[in-house]
Image (cartoon, rainbow, N blue to C red; front, top):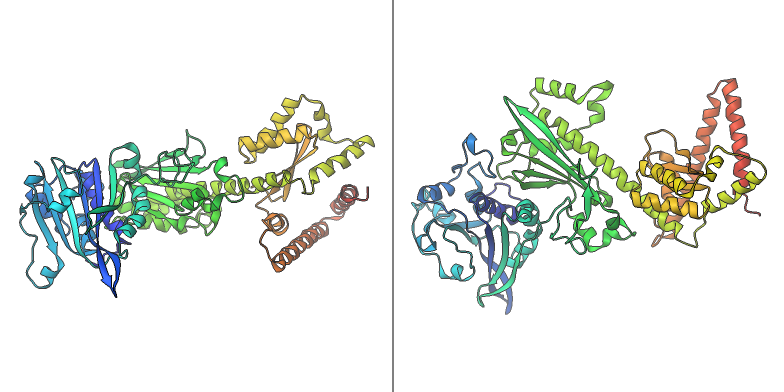
Length: 587
């Protein structure tokens, strides 16, 4: 039982906090007492005892004894399946995973009435303890009474001693490593005010506090305020609901037998302000987001895990968030482990290939029915997993578009940059002066605001946020530009699209097309701190991409019948004439 799979002490401590919150505690305290050790005339701090104290309902003798037994407890019946705990393993399993002895005091009529019992590995090994001792009245040690003011009329104190399996050696390390995890696990309770969690590290000899603070919510959706996120996003949301506040949450029904339970899927994406600038990922709030990558899986409001299996190995993954919350009644469907650290079945759906699963026009419903017939436990999770994967893909694409358009925006503001749009506009004005007319030219006579609105709406439809689209449209019209370059994930096999809007031509590069990565992206990426060899390689890759693009056109012509081939050849020649004019810099 000591090797029961807790990832670290923070997850084991969370089991005790689950019990506290479930017992109605409004305040929970993590108290770490460290002592000074001397090694070769040098002092060092080492953890001595760890305690979790709460002001919950407390336990009577019968419940206290059950709480220390493996596989026993008060939440094992189906009627209790709305609670965080129900496995009857939390207190003893988590405790022995880190320490050789656990003492529990619990009281219901003032701490003077506290009952005490314990579990001791050494006594079990020697045969002295073969059952949990009958709880008896026993005073709480004075040192614990002095380190907290939260000893209410009722409550529980759990103390670990003889700590031999905690990977963190000091109280400070335990709190530093636990703070973000505890804040994330219990963010719903902390944010709503249902509970508060104190984190304290106590110097055993001097009886002073090395750390004494309250845990703040750590929200991987970054929609909460008053969180542990660095400024300025500690007091304002860093993300915004996706796709919007009204529809960012989807409730998926899961029917088991005669009962229907609902699973909530919530999504969010980084605000424009959080992504601005090329160094956002390296800022304090960017590195905070990098520690919260994955899908947050919650059970009864408490996070089981932040599953990274849904994310790619890409720094941009930090800019989206997904939260999946389900009730304990669906534990078997989700595959919840008894240490409440993983939803095994749901995690496995992250690897599902839905393109293969839904090939030949098969629907999610049909795939689900087939899986149910095969007795596959993942069947009930299929719709949820598909929704999560689809939303992540859409957000990932939008984040990519945001990044590329931010880069283009920065390039437009770089006065030293070659302004292709301006040069193309000058060439177009020359052609107009020669009597050459285009479909878009007629709209140049429309009112300025109408032109801006048409352009901005087109850019917004392609994935730009409203502010960037409006700014780009205004810059184009006020600068008398005929061309606007944008980048988007287009659902088309074309490398780019051309849309005449508001008297301008919007040329949108399809970032999904391989030509984009081979030609554009490889050249646009940050060139600072790049070696000469890396820059040379990028240029060679771009040249190879250009050659492949031209050879693809050659093959296109070659595959046409005689009449269509003539049209393709004529188009190539006509385009070449205009391209020669646009590219000629001799004037």
